[in-house]
Image (tube, rainbow, N blue to C red; front, side):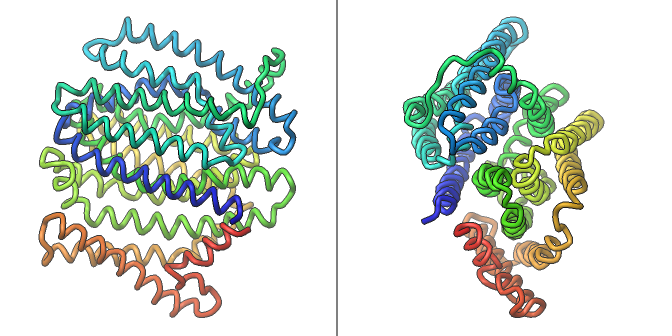
Length: 487
């Protein structure tokens, strides 16, 4: 089995597992700690996570890319790792100190929860996952994360029993973030040797890393700032409603992220070796794959959201169904942009285009949130996120329009988009004769899957015939997956 096939397999299995964990814990937590508890956790986590972002700067992408380029030269890899990690140590120590001051002076009524989140901020000091991604050792990270998440899940059900146990839930989540980073250090020495580098070898990484940090912080503005703004401008109840809606919509994106995570170091390595033609094939097939998956997920979630939210999260979260339906197009926007970002912009060091797109998206999100949250609360945050994600996708696509074949991507993918629309209407129409319970939801999901596959196959046969057989081989995924896995 090729290394790419193994890596995608490991990541897909893990991401599916990672999707199942919140599906198991979310309904329990929603009922046990309620909308306010979910809102307080979301609010404090979002703020603590900003400190983590500043501690790690743009190292997740920069370190991954840098290691991927030199992984065939052990001496150069040791030097690169040591320089980047020393920079991470310096930034993390400064930020950890600033977070301690934040707790003391600005913790307010949530000082205890912010203090528990300290372990999350501390984890930034020990995070070397970027190195393992750079050398394409995904199995290591997958096994580690799986074990940690199993322990975390069991702990939630054992220790979190009522709203007063919110601090226990926060402790579990914060400690698992720290533990997952510490475990990697037992494996690191097998692959790289760390030494204290010269000052110049540390400083040379600052500028390119800061450039990549700009999009990281910008993305966080429209991924997390909406929760902070809701907490400040609305109520914790509205924050909790939005948190669960956002969680459900972004869960399917973990599958897309898994593909991008595997492909980014591979693409960086291919471009470094001048294999541009093979890279174009990868991008086209990856784009076709994510369109097929993201369209199915977006329209499917939108179709069942109104019934699913109160049944899954509890009656207290009924309005989340409306938010989920409105937010579902984010899956398509984000998936499309993910391929452009992870397989073209970042591997080719086109950091400026990436930064401009997400900065614009962040600005759009902040403006829309500021205008709409005071009046529409959680729905205002949803509209802000939609505008931001669409802006990022549009600007990234426009910036590479001369280099990538977007007309071909649209031509290849329109069948799935049309099938998604029809599936949505079929599933929503089934509300008239299917019971509003768990069995009914499962039946609607099956109806959606079958109709999406059937319509895609039929349209593929009618419009593409033998020329594009992959459009009617298991919704068009057989050829694409085989191509990605075996190249």
